[in-house]
Image (tube, rainbow, N blue to C red; front, side, top):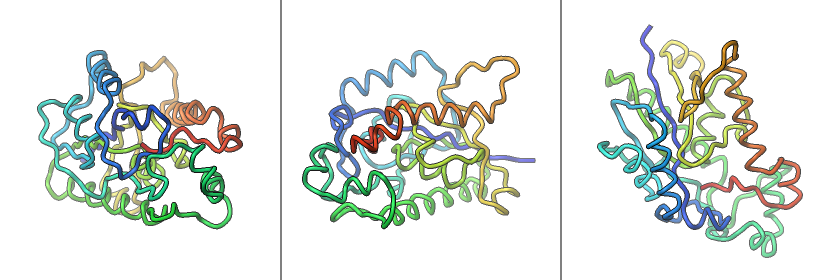
Length: 247
């Protein structure tokens, strides 16, 4: 049966990311260190090729695409941009927590949903991203192309993987390092029936040992990465500082 593959890759770091600032709609370029890290990844690993290349229009994504895929001519998808953090843009968690008592509730994700002041509602962000991804998947099926590379933001990729990825995992379980990501296989019948795709490999690929259960490993690795990013989630919540603060 014919299937379609989408390779989901997170952009490299900006100076704002390196300073621990919430960078969403702010259009920062890659930092020198972020660009160098991507070049090192490209030299060390073989990144998957594709027939179509898709990208958030923000500079940190287009520059990442240019480094990892120098010959690609990506299609820019406006709805793949990161969440707008409004008045929290460009600030660290510590700065925001001092100014706005709602921030800790937003971090914890408990009780009434909190929207960053003058920013984007989380549910609206998820709907925007998911609608864009569904158009991408269905566009592949209509066009006859069977593969695409998608370079976007951490929050965007986590939204897609949490909504459509098999094996199932939570939003924060899918956090990934800059320049890294996951490959998803979409089978038309399953997609039309259940709107899901099989997440079958990491990017860059990790060597697999004999007897490994690939499905279990993917989710375990995703959760380990999330714990590293959070410094264990409970500790991050207590500190009011989630390091995955996209991106």
